[in-house]
Length: 82
Image (cartoon, rainbow, N blue to C red; front, side, top):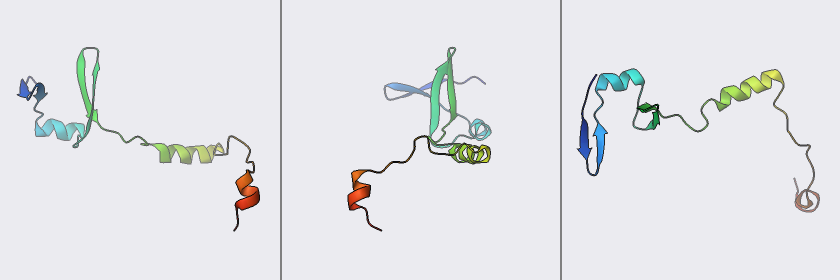
């Protein structure tokens, strides 16, 4: 599909047809980038997208353990009370 760049202040924009927006699953916020001379507009992903599933998989594999051994601090020894 061909379209034209439209002036938006000092910038330019592209009007996306509703059908294209729906097919791509776009919402109000998108990721914008350039790859091999093409402008890429993609669904925005959250910073922690997929973390919950990754944590479940780590648990199933027994990899959800602390990396460092726990140790006491001065606060633990002198100030902490239950």
